[in-house]
Amino acid sequence: MTAGGFFAAAPDAALAALFVPFEAGELQLPADGRALFLRARTGARLREMAQPGWLCEQSFLPFADELGRCGLRVGEATADEKFPLVLLLPPRQREEARALFARALTHVAPGGTLLAAMPNAEGAKSGEADLAKLAGAVQHLSKHKCRVFWCTPSPGGIDQDLLAAWLALDAPRTIADGYVSRPGLFAWDRIDRASALLAEYLPADLHGRVADLGAGYGYLSAQVVARCPRVDALDLYEAEARALEPARANLARAVRESGHAVAVAVHWHDVTRGLTQRYDAVVSNPPFHQGRADLPELGRAFIVSAAGALLPAGRLLMVANRHLPYEAVLASRFHDVRTLAVQEGFKVIEATGVRG
Image 1: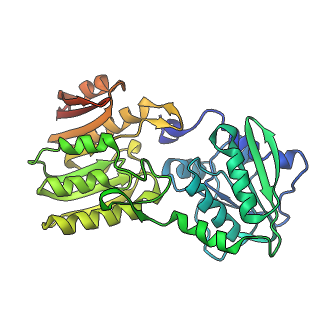
Image 2: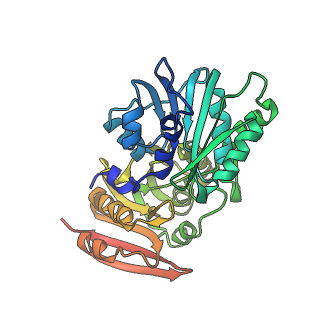
Image 3: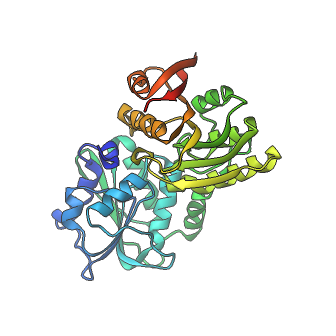
């Protein structure tokens, strides 16, 4: 299975709903064929509607790769680019969504339209209200248990003070214990309890080159630097590009405070596609869900990639929710698997003796 297969959702209701205003005759596609699609996701309707002048932005690498494989143009709009149509699939997290509404409006050309769709169960009414607060009158339709809403802001209709305040919501900020994060990342405003538990069991004799798979804003990597003085190189892998800037800041602080040299690198990478480097150790709190649904295949793919990247004497240290069925794949890839702790609904596992 490809990474796109791991992350692809079953019918994407919000994406399907997004194009209903065109089907209903409420909106027309731009005559010049240009549009910007923020947080774009691929799907049959997008492939039918998209034109060569469309630019798709997606910070989550598996989704970005899937868009590219479908022949869509993937990249990032420059700060001053304007489009007659800006489409948006807002995220569930409200501060992140507000920042995206604000940014989307900065890319709408005079007389242009901003169009968004959200599932009803994920804050669609609040999203519509937020856009109206920011840009004035909003129209909407309901379809596929989603709300589709749009506006064509007048020249003076945007609340500029609110726009500036909401744009700032996406800036990395300091959270618990001095870590830097930003809204929308996993456990963005706190120390994830599972990662903290794994940190408590990091062995002091961990050494050499270490990889952190699915590292988020870098908490676990920073803990490796702080607790394992024999580690001299650390590679952080994360598929969400928005996490990379906070991760770099957190690693820089950790190295500075540790008092010893550690060569660190941060990679925008889909771990399910494997790693090219070899490591003395791998640490991971692998993702296991998409939206609200458990997706244990994703964690199993992380284990397979970790085993493939470890040197013969290497070891994997991971944490997972207690109920997740990882034991079979661990036993198939390692000779020795032991549970170091079962606590607060989590299990900490060490695996050694990579099978050839």
